[in-house]
Length: 383
Image (tube, rainbow, N blue to C red; front, side, top):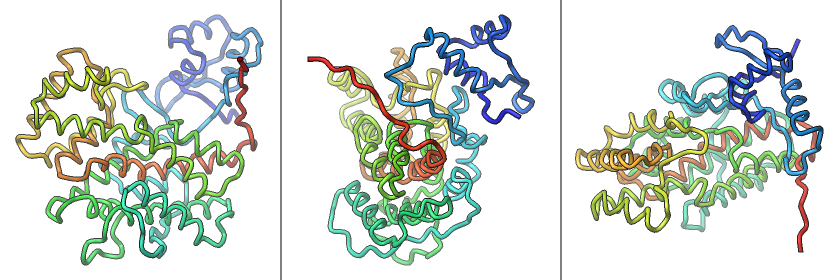
């Protein structure tokens, strides 16, 4: 029985060819396809695909590729977006709690304890710095932080997620001990109890929970490959996510909306294009025909905006479309949610960081089952 199979799209992507070319390989006897009853398509054996990829390179060893990473955590689908263990994130965002999706990603027996440890008073002010501080303290207060069994890793991830959520802002009066992560996070981000968009924040957390082998996820997997403990591995992801080209992208889209409201949409877009050469919140390296996460989140975020701000957002999207700018992505939806409800400019990155702890942990667990120290790139020395 074959254990590792690839979908048609994944097989074509691995070989660097289009789907018709893949089936041409099948007709020429270079590959064998297998029926996929669940999706009415075809499956391909990973070993055969890897062997054909090696032959297409003329048998050469590749010195630039870190490793071939086979994952069962998340599949990226052009039409449906990220699919977590066979379930579309856009569906889960409407039907599930973030905690339940995290347990799904971890394949844990759950539910577990999502209570934050008592870390004392946080001395830092910037949100991301407070999160780093909380993660360090979580590890320092875990007496068995080096326990790498799956249930222990899941326990570490729950307490870390709760702790990072807790330091985003002061707890509101009367917060219930059993409040969900989305409820806790929304209450700390929103300016008043009447503006707490809990359902939208929960959906955002689910939609951002994982995105296959994103840069920060790779950092976590590299840390896992040397058997770093969960807290140190999650810190590697948090450090990578902090970059403006990754977790900070939604804040740039937030600033675009602020300027559009102040100076007018046309002027704001033109100024940003002149300064940066691109519009933040638009285009995606994977989704050429639109980011499904954008539509799913914007559906929940838009009703929270005032009529005036909905009109500004619509004008931004329409003007970009009229000039063939790539379609909007999830960063714009995160920006619209935070800008439209009066949450801080770095809200998108905050939600991103809390959410991605779930995906990082799933990939950390998966990487522990692989051969250690497999990530070793080769440098080309030049004078």
